[in-house]
Length: 172
Image (cartoon, rainbow, N blue to C red; front, side, top):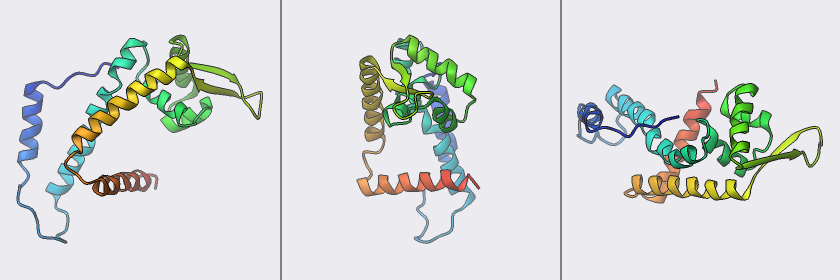
């Protein structure tokens, strides 16, 4: 996946959209307006771009697919079975197999028979995979710390809970 760096023209257009919303702080307890909701949607959609950019170098260096770097994160977090990765990523097993083949070819992961069920394939990061995961982790942390520096840690934690609640409400 190629991640384009924003152009000055693109930035100007997006800033113009944000400037259309009033900069007047509404009174405490005021209901959300369409401007509030629109600006929130704008933020949710475009905030992912710097995070995606955090994986760019590792993805290019290792010729990974668009999900490769995120799969390293999931495997590191203990999601070690291909069918679980397919579920988490919301993709079919054949597409997951192609992604895992790229990770294996890049020597970032290994597969072995499962510890409790030898019929199941279990995935693990190699030393190179651990090193690349640390690169991704550090870059994501740098981007998020810089972008959220003016907020108190409790505000960031609240925002995290709000995003989780949004994700969970979308399930039905």
